Image: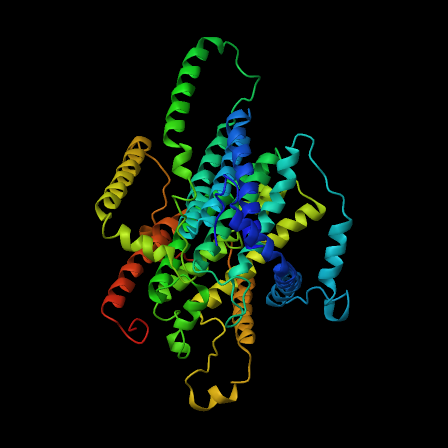
Length: 366
Length: 202
C-alpha cells in the first residue's frame, strides 16, 4: 500500500488502521531482524571470499610462475589473509595536506558500497536470495556503474597528478566497456524474455547445451572481456599501471582506506563472476541435467554448490589471465572496446532477434 | 510498518534531494556542485522507486549517474577551473535575476497547484507484485510512441555527428595511427632480409 503523498494529514479511518496495526509491530520487527541477519550472512561470506581470493591470487600466480607463494602464516599459508587484514588495520591513515578531506574519506566508501549492494539480487539457489525483484539485471548494472565514482573522486580529491591520471583513465575505460557489457546483457534479456535473474536461470533448464553460453557465445565472450575491464584488472589495469603512474587512483591511500578499495575491487570480481555463472552458465543448475545416469548420480548436490563451482572457475580465469597476458596499451584498450566489442554485440543482438522470431533451436522456441 | 517505512524513506530522501539541489547552485567549487547534482539524481531515483517506476529509476542511475555525469565530472576535472573568490559586481544583474526568478515562481505555482495533488482525487496507481514496469513501457514506446521515439534517436545521432565534425580536423600528415590490418598482413620478408655473407679470411 503506497500512500506517501499524504500531505494533508491522515484521515481518521487511516489513523485507526495505523493504530490497529501496532499489534503486528513485533512481527514486523522480527521480519526486519531476519532481513538484517540475511544481509549480514551474505556480507560476511563475501568478506571471507574476498580474503581468500587474495590468497588464491598469490598462490595461483605463484604456481604459474613456478613459485610457491605465501606459505609461512598458518598451515600452507592459510592464515595469510588474516595477517594482511590485521596489518592494514594497524597502519596509519595519511591524509595529504592539500587533499579534499571529506571527498577523500567518502571515495573508498563509494567504491565499497555499490559492490556490496549489488549482491542483494543475486540468487544463490532457487528462491535463495535477498530480494527477488523484476528488474534484477538492471539493478545489477546500475550498481556496477556507480562504482566508477569512488575511483573518480579518489583521484581528484587526493590532489595528486598520478591519482588524477589514474582516475581519468579508469573512468574513460569503464564508460567505454559499460556499453559493450550493457549490449551483452541486452542479448541475455532478449533470450530469456525477463530481467529477473531467477527467471533467466530457469529459462536455461535442460542441460549444458541449453545454457546461454552456446547460443550467445559472442556475447558471453564480450561480457567476460568487459567484466575484466570494468574491474580494472589485468590486462586492462592501466588505471593503476605501476610502471607509469605509480599506483593510479589510490596512490595517496594507506591503511584501512586503501583496504576498502581493495575489498571493493575483489567484491566486484566475485560479483561479475557470479553474474557470468548466472547469465551464461545456468546458475545453480546441474551440468549433468538430461544425461541418463550422471543426472541421478549427482541429484543430491545442492544447487548452490554448482553455482559456487562455476563462479570459482570464473574467478580462477581472472587470476589466470592476469598471470598470462601483458598489459594493454591505452589506445588499444579503446580500440578493442569501441571498434571490436561493441560492433560484435550489435550484430549478435540482431541475430538473436531473428532467432527469437523464427524460434531457432531449443533455446528460442518457447 | 510498511507505511511508516515508506514515509521515512520518502521524507529522508526528499530532504537530501532539496539540500543537494540547493548545494548545486550554492557551492563555489564546480566539482562539488557536480557531485551534489549526482546526489540529487540519486535521491530522485529513490523517489521514483517509491512510485514503482523501477525501470525509469534504474535507467536514470546508469544512464545519467553512471555515464553522463561521469563524463561531466571528467571534463570539469580536466579543465582545472580557477576557484577564486566570487566575482564582484553582481548588482547590475540583480533586476534580471529577480525577474527570471519571479517568472519561474509564477510558472511553478500555477503548474503545481495544491489541488493537483489532492490524494483523494489523484490516487497513486498501485500495481500487483508481478507487474513488469519495463514490459508496459516497452509495449507503449514501440507502438504508440514509436514516431517520437525514433525522432529523438535521430536527433541524438545528428548531435553525435555534428560533435564529431567539429572535433575532427582531418588526418594530420605524419600521424602515428596504428593500422592493425596492415600490421597483420606483414610477413617476414617485408621487414627483414637475410643476407648471406661469406666469412672473411684472415
